[in-house]
Length: 387
Image (cartoon, rainbow, N blue to C red; front, side):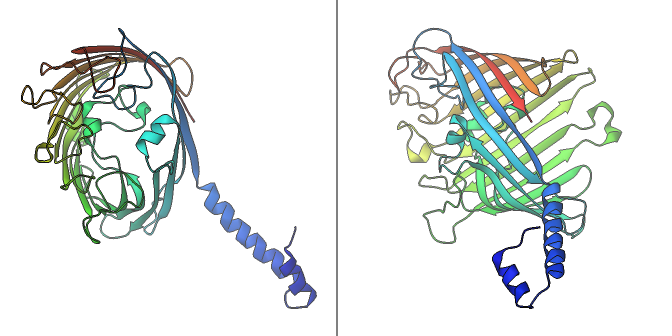
């Protein structure tokens, strides 16, 4: 065993013995190994190829991670690496999670350039059934779909994804009232993403959030495991007023083996509008999505999503014609086939048809902000390796 120079000097002076130093270092090493052994390493590499039917790729409003910049070519989407020590069953359990993102989608998600999606300390307080805490940066509590595309039934994201917050820095508490009911509440710096970001309003201005989850118990027969969720997040999002996001959604098992249905509703008040068309007083938006999922065979899964969104002009695009149409009304149909060809690999093909429902032509074209079509059709392939 090697000792540092300070330990050797103390041993030479007779202050400590090498035997005690060996025991101390072995004890310290044992503590380190115990902590490291309970840490889990996981991650994924997400790639895609996307082709947009027709010419003109300058505009594809409503698309989060598969739009402009990725069309008609091959893409590295994102690489995710996670280190995590989940909470044990101990009363005073402690753990942590660190999820790092690399690649184009990670840069979109985390505009601060920290490459961090989640980084928090997890704690349990033994009150009642146990209160679980997250302290640090964590994923938002609302939404049907996730940033990690492999967790979603489809590769492309819904319109609702674009209306929701993504990340908060703060404190989140979760409590399980029973096997059927769980609640959470938290406080964070802002509604919008940005590690350690502060609201410019005043020093103590914060964002607040709460949610409730209902899960069907075993006694509900084929409905067991079905879950319904509702949540709210309110706080600063970079605009002149606080943004409020309301969400309701869930999935329901059916008596047909392998078939499940889901739905999601998002409503956002006073949200940020990246385009110039909407006045600050009209920054409203909502989205409705319906999902069908069918496990056709052991390896083949078919997923479908119908999606509709309506919002103040400027939310997804600027109509450029004040008075003609004050809304951004969009609809889409997405069909995804997921076939497990290789172990640890998600391989799927996707068809998506987007259509403007308000008489505008926001798609295509060769100049950003100036579309020429009412419709857009894309074909995609998504290959993900999980480890």
